[in-house]
Length: 169
Image (cartoon, rainbow, N blue to C red; front, top):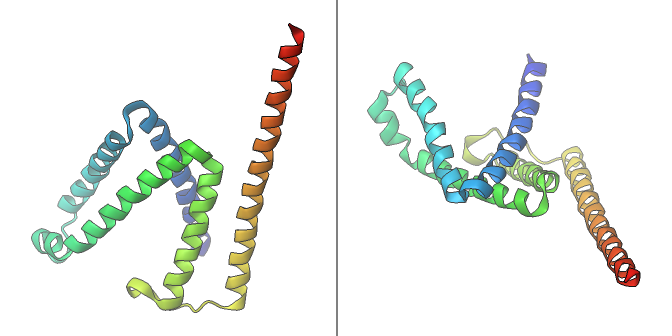
């Protein structure tokens, strides 16, 4: 069963990248606020249907009342994430944006595990986990460095083309 959950996590990550790219393209077409509103409405409809079909153990009203602060916090975080990722993809590209998103998730998860935030099981940061994070940070650094080198080379190539065009006339 463990392999099923590993596969599900990988699939979730793949879907997150597709989701971000679709949002970025959609924001260019209809604007970021419209994407966020439509995304939220479309996300809410199946969730409400599920809640109505499978009545929560506390009852619908009690669940909505007691869960309000969590819905509010989660909704605000969700809007922030969608906005940040959408804008990032449009400006730095999907790969760079998602590598940084994953790094942020890894760091956030390590902190949550270490301190048992929000009631999660405490899993202290040990040497192996720290080395893993350092390797990920190094990978992110290499990616960003390779992109800055690529931009510099592209810029030089464009200058050469412009100079050659000036010499033709």
